[in-house]
Image 1 (cartoon, rainbow, N blue to C red):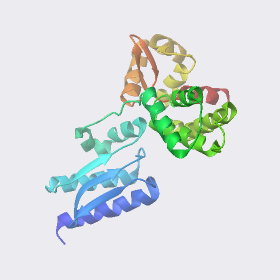
Image 2 (image 1 turned 90 degrees about the horizontal axis):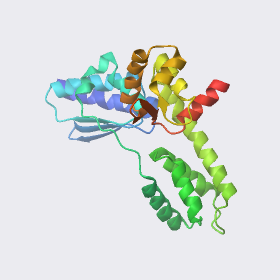
Image 3 (image 1 turned 135 degrees about the vertical axis):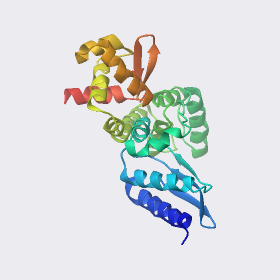
Image 4 (image 1 turned 90 degrees about the vertical axis):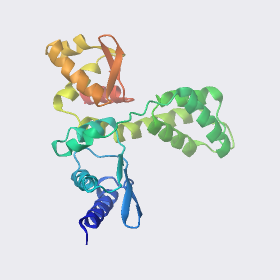
Length: 258
């Protein structure tokens, strides 16, 4: 078997491993005449040996001139950890696309259309509250929408109590799914920086974060930049940062109290 075909087989086998072990819903590989054209990986897991194997095989295939592309999607922390993996420096040549948050008005319009199609009656103020609650997160859009459909009976408008229960459920699912995964891809000092930020109700002054950490501002700036690059926080205004991951601050506050 030619080396190129061997590499294709290895990539396919790696994809099967990803699909069954590392990221259950994730790897899809399209082939044409046994030549891989595109490999798609969703829900990237940080520091995954399967991803290392896949990227290594992909690099070999590119080196042999095969017409193949690799597309990987994941949470910012997982993507940053993968790019910083010493074994995967090849990926730093890739084009990086950061998806912006959805606008609340677009989410509200989507809910209005979706709920109408599903026969779910919900008053406009409550629907807008649900849209606002997502904080522009596509995943929260899905969680909130699902929780609402589970509580709607179709016979009467969704009550405020039912909406509150749906939002609480969606938030719990989001925090359980996203927050631990985001933090696990970070260093201990990164998490310490975030914990110091969580003491503020709004944007955090970097000098205040440094003071809480007991470090110099210059030292704290290093981790500010790391966390911005990882997509976990974002600049608010000069000298201030805020959380970019919805509800992560609340998650850290509760963890501090436990």
